[in-house]
Amino acid sequence: MIIAMSGASGFVGSNLRRLFEGRGWQVTPLGRTEFLLPVEGLAQAIEGADCLVNLAGAPVIGRWSPAYKKILVESRVGLTQRLVSACAMLAHPPSVLLSASAIGCYPSLGTHTEESEVQTDDFLGGLIHDWEREASRAKDFGLRTAIFRFGVVLGRGGGALAKMIPPFRLGLGGPIGSGRQPFSWVHLNDLMRVLEAAVTDPTFSGIYNVTAPQPTTNAELTKALSLALSRPAWLPVPEFVLRILFGEGAQVLTSGQTVLPQRLLQRGFSFDFPSIEATVVDCLAPSP
Image 1 (cartoon, rainbow, N blue to C red):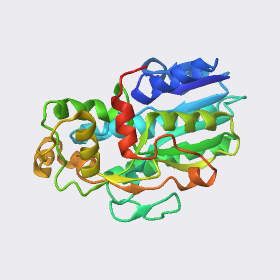
Image 2: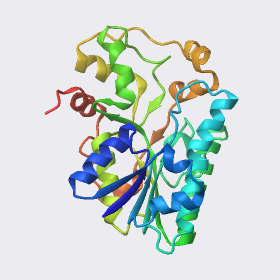
Image 3: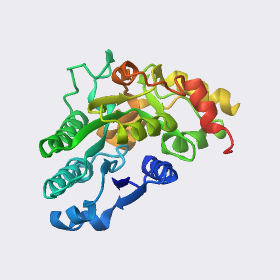
């Protein structure tokens, strides 16, 4: 199995690459060098791959200045468009495209599955819509296409927890604002199990929410971290402070979504880490 992968150096990508290579699969990273090539050159880099995994995207947490919005769009929509266009040039393109997306397309109110038709009418919602649209074009060129809307990915050694843990260890952790905002996440190990299965299972296609089946709140996440670290978590982070720091981009931290992985559950996928308490404990445990 030969897998071409964008975003192979990121938190999810680097762990997924180790998993795939441990299975004896060959991973061909697609990075800055390949994406600076003309589309014809990018096609040559992909040629021979059995599967294309698209995980690239600039960090969404930050100040969304007009310049940074362009980076967010180009690193997701533009890059995905180039990947699909490169596949279209090949006589024998990869048989499958697995493309990342995000649950930020869903509103903060209500509980959402893949069948939910209401999506946010803001920059993030538009970004995700366009991102998924470009990935879906791969179906026109014969690629089995599966799009995965990630919740907040929690795992050891990086990702969101790497930014949360230091203030908690100092006793400076706390909920964001009221803490009532919903929080839908997925353990890194469960996410990788989903993507590994989707590489070879021809029934994986369309859109999937990749979130644990027991969504929680920011306050419950804070409580789980406080208990696991044996540290107080009494210092709330005012939302206005985040708006000062990140402007429009603060919405990623101050709002959230309640999202269920309906399609994964319907196909019988069993989550190893369904609860936030078990997830946090595992992520903070010493590496074996």
